[in-house]
Structures are given as C-alpha cells and as structure tokens.
Length: 358
Image (tube, rainbow, N blue to C red):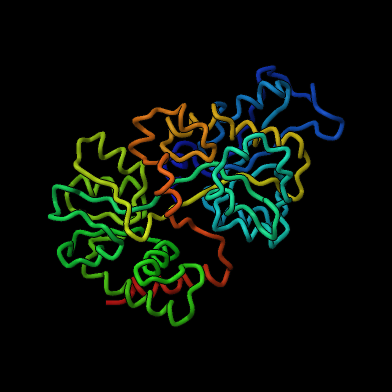
C-alpha cells in the first residue's frame, strides 16, 4: 500500500504531542477515569490537526500524543510488546492478527457517528467473528498504468502484462503478496485460498513474466521517473498518486480497470485492548472520520475516504481522476485481506524463488 509520501515528510519513530485549542495540559472536560492524554499510533503524516479538528474543539485541554511507525510489521511487533496506545492505524491484511492475538478490542458501533456512511465493501474487512474491530479510514487502488503513446493497444486485463509486445518495458511492484494476488487473478484463483498446487502455478506464471520486465519498482518516485522517461510503458500495481503526478507533468498515461478488477488497500482505526482512554478514542475516531477530515484526505492526499459523504464535498476533478466515486469499480476491487503468518511467509519465499529464477 502507498504510505511512502507521508513517511518521507517526518520519518520514523518520532513522537509528537499536540494539545487542543485551549493550549494547556489537563483533564478539563473529561471523566475521572478518561483524562488523557490520548495516545495515537500512526503513520507519519496523518497527525495533522485538519484530521482531528472536531476532537480538539470537543476536548480543548486534552493532549494528543502521537507515536509513528513506518511499516505494518513494525506496528504489529510494537503492540505485541504491550506498547501503550489508545488508537492505532494498521492496514487490512494485518487486522486479523491483532484480533487473534488479543491486541484490539471490539467496537461499539452505536458510538461511531459516521459508521453508517461507510460502504459495506470497506467495513466488512474490519469484522471478525461477528464483531467490528476496525473502522476503515483511508483506501486506494492498485492497477495498471499505461503510457498511452508507447503502446498500440490499451491493456484490458492483468494477463496483458505477459504480452510479448511489451517485452523489456514492464515494471511491477516488488512485493510477494501483491504479485501472488496478481498471478492468482490471472489464473482464476481466489488469492487468499490457494492450495499448494495453485501456489506453484502462480510461481510458474510469475516466472514467465520475467522476459517482459525492465525492473521491480519499490517506491512511487521510482515508478514515476521510469514512466516519465518512457522506459516503462506498463506499470503494474501503480497507485493513483502516480497517475496524478504524471498527468501534472503532461505525460500521456491512463489508469485502467482490468477485467479481473483493480487491486486495493484499506487501512483504518482500532482501539487497543489495553487502551486507557476509551471514551477519548471513540471521540478521536469520530473526528477523523468526519466529512471535513475525510474531504481533506481526498483533496490533499489523493486517497479514497471511508466516509462516502465526503465525495460530494471534495474537489470533483480529483474525485473524477481517482475514480473513487464509482461504485462499480469499488465493488469489483480485490482488496488485500487478512493473512496468516504462514501465508505471509509463503508469499515471501515464493516471490524470492521467482526473482531468483533465470
């Protein structure tokens, strides 16, 4: 998933403290047992006051302490140590691990002001054992980006990455899980329910793609440069911000919807099992999922927002370019799902085999 831009803004393992408009530490309007400070474990870049202005107004004397992580694996490892936080913001393929390890508490939906304005196609990923544990916040697509002036025909399928006409001009994202999903979609498998035999077929299929590859890309700045230079004609698993940046540079590109569906990620908030400020945590989540906060996310970050009401308030040119208001595309999108440690290990080892193959 694409957190790269905002990781570069501040860096890793930073701790920042903010206080609401009142400017003083203290418990002001809080209950005896829920006095703050509120602890939030976040990706760098999402601590901006624009995302929690409603909370600051509601609790002007409450301090919000932010701690930052750079990768989902880092966040999960940290919470396993019983790291003290109230709210945290992982992505969906890790959510079930938090539930299984007792690191997150079930949510009271009656306390979530904006949950009813979120599509079920996103909220379903945060539900386990009949209970909601995570609230979606940000989401985005991964799809095929095409340099339209370099190809005779626009691809219509993930399988078109294998077209010999693109030999030496394809770049794909360097991720075992991502490419397992791509290979599974091409072969008609359920990416998250493959057998050992199907895994081997995916490895073989991905190995057959290698003659078409120029490189594996790891950072959005890298793929932007490769497409802009004309070296890459077909960028697999490109993020929408890549499209936006290339369009701004006047590069002729198109972001397609493959027949098998786009891929997508969704991240969101949970309340830690050992949270000390549960009431404040609910108020914070309500603030970050408000229409105002979600509109800011779309306009300034170029991500999809979980609160559907924000779509009407956001810049319509951005909404149209990102295609985040099209329910048909959203409902066809294959989002990353929770995986077991064994699945994650298999994705990595199989991907290593693909890259090592001649």
